[in-house]
Length: 276
Image (cartoon, rainbow, N blue to C red):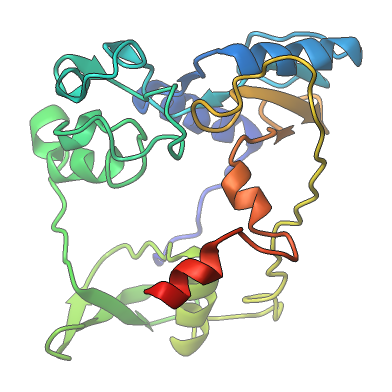
């Protein structure tokens, strides 16, 4: 929030920002295996065209694009744990049933973790901004919780009040620009508790959860579903003519999670809990 009227931000600017993210993380084509081949073959039988670009221009099927480092070196090529460490191995291990982009490879530096999430990519970049750009490095405050944005006018704020979660001490931090980005729950809470303008009464409304629908089947041929994380294929359902305006549906192989939604639960779980 500043005292100036914010500039307009159109869809083409959003595309440029998205392309910067794709280049920086980077966003790459997911590694393909047996289950991906089965998935793509089934989608082709439905008549869905195959698309190799990142832009979803129409209903299509193709490889998933994600910010997970590609497997290189010994990744997926050996069962020797000593060979599974950096620098011998890089990226995601596509053979083990681990979450896509976990903290592996073992002993890897932060920027080489398989999943290029915020704490692996943008936070290290911001902490070292003075080394690779003309900007200044950020100051990261752990154990801190913002409790109020201090408004001075209907369009401007003077700073933030934050609380140290260990000591309970409050600190008022002055700022020329305040970026309020605390997620779908904490952002409206902080907004409303700070008395920021809510002229259309829409702040905090419209919160919705994802609806999951499961379709379970049995294949007569080997699918490789026991190996690796979710399927790396994706169906893009375009709703607009422009790029990156589609929806993706990716069937997963996390059967342990899926089966936990059964009425009978997970076999042996309660018995194990009783023993413990």
